[in-house]
Image 1 (cartoon, rainbow, N blue to C red):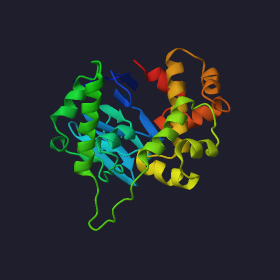
Image 2: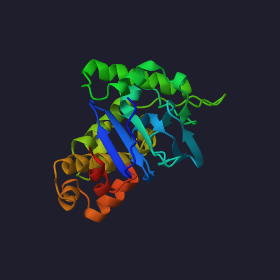
Image 3: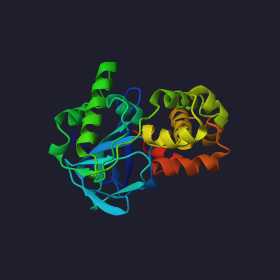
Image 4: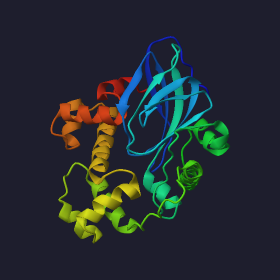
Length: 273
């Protein structure tokens, strides 16, 4: 399970079996780093080799082999090796909507301290990463979402006396989310969101982030970048991938891609194994 770091400078990214809303990846970096970026998913990973360092919520963090890092959607972070030998990790990217379904519609939990000791997560999530190349069946996907939700709740920051969160219109908000995901290259007028949800634009803007960990605009950007990643894997030129996903031009897409993944599209493609 431990990835070989090797002596050659570079990045290696390898994607394993996933399912709707869950992606599994292994990354190895030697002499390279990720620039500051943010995802719209929960990112829950384990350092497998070397020492991983990153900045998160204004503080430097260190994640040793066997330790986990838990990153909330839309929180900026980077990633670099703490020693010259580089580092490697395996990670789960989990759609916040899956977490919320597992929690019965409650607002998303927030884990303030992103580094968690091995015993704080449990062996089942580790086993999912160890078997990341195996297909993820539908029931396994649901079980994995429940494991992730339980781990997040267990380590969530819940200050004493905090007022209870208001109920969220999850069903209505999901209709907005589904409209965006079905055609992310199209700019939908906000009036269309109001019609499909029955909510005001103000309620949509306020509750969407609480429900799904990001804003509607940011959610659309990430779905467009999903399109870009799929077409780049098929060998589509950068300019064509950008236009097909609804970006103004290649440079606009490249800026958004780097902000989301910490690499340019060219660097990301070159790192795939």
